[in-house]
Image 1 (cartoon, rainbow, N blue to C red):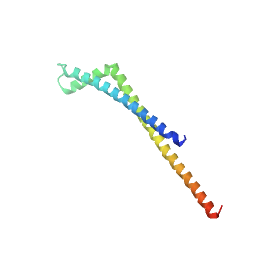
Image 2: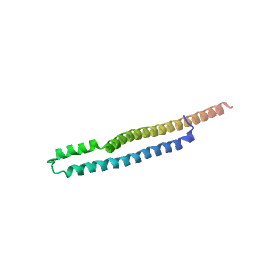
Image 3: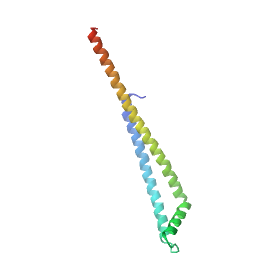
Length: 123
């Protein structure tokens, strides 16, 4: 366990890391949305497609062959896992800090109780 005074900086750094990953995740989500919008547009304006099921199938085909879309989806999955791990680490640090504070209070309480016991005995 680290010193009590080091926890706030470590917690802030862990929160910043989670926010950075979240920012990256939002950027990738915009990229995915753009690819999906282009696929929707492609499927919508193909005159030989007769119904929504055919348009959805065409949209799926367009996205399936788009390597950049597949890469963006893979990145989105990786960043989602990274964000979950970063948040778990942040919570771990917060919980460690809480435990360290409680242990410090307990140590102070023991010291006070030992001091009061000595005063009662007359030492």
